[in-house]
Length: 121
Image (cartoon, rainbow, N blue to C red):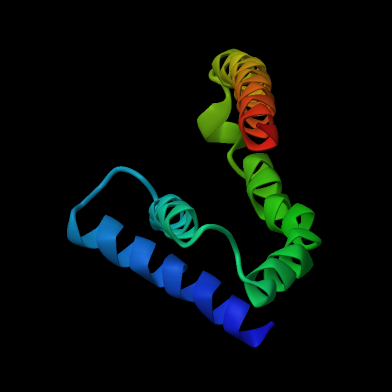
């Protein structure tokens, strides 16, 4: 599991370095996740230690989302006239996220079925 954590932290560091060096508007964590995705696609999947480390960290995900939510309470003065826009953006963003996820899932299922047919021949 330790080697899996090292890989995850390495890609976080790589993403932060790339984002800072190239002055990207994307956060370093997102760049690191994209780099990890490319790495996993090239490698053909995750190792056992990376899978184990990822599974353990997923359990902590809700705790990582609490600080931004609490931070909104302290932005009352700044957000006073913006609640409708923020709420609408969150609603539309959630709908788009669900729609895109459903579309990608359907595409992956069709692709899996097609590749399964090719292997049976």
